[in-house]
Image (cartoon, rainbow, N blue to C red):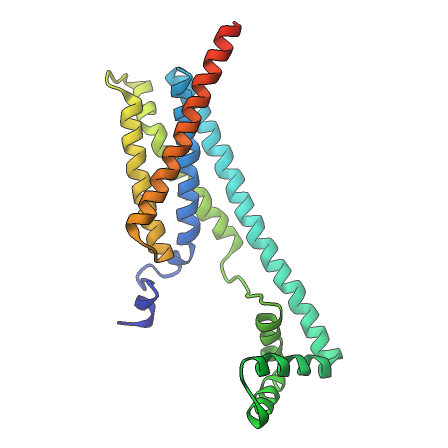
Length: 243
């Protein structure tokens, strides 16, 4: 077994796997958001057309908002890293004695002593880039994000819209070709399957128990739907009575 396989990485997926975390969590948010809207609309006895309008409005607006937030967060992290990296380069060039002593303290805390410690310090401080990299990692505890902020935002948007569309699918079919059966029941079952699939993907990404991950994801969706349903039901009764 290769080291990549030990860490749960699939060579066939390549760069795509780097953005699986964003895809999974974007999908969870998309399904929860849209299913909550559908459940709230069902609880308020809204027409299919109104539920679709509210659902698609939330799907697109929240998906875009979330993807922009993910992009800006990743971009800010990169900029923050570069800012501190620039400061460390200045300190290495202008106050090398102080920075060298900090390297010595860092490796002494790791158990290095005597001549071995001094040899390690000399080796690190002989290479400015290595020196700065060590200061960033061990002193500031900062690691550079290698993923593209744009791709992070894009993966979030795609997953939010794709998975978030599932709770609207049955209502969309019903709008064009009326269904005699309970469409909310079909929507719940289909969305439940989507939650299970995303929960499985989450367990794969986080290397956690599949059953636990699926249960947590389905439970989260169910809780959001129940809250939305009863809020819609209460508000419907309140406003109808007012009218």
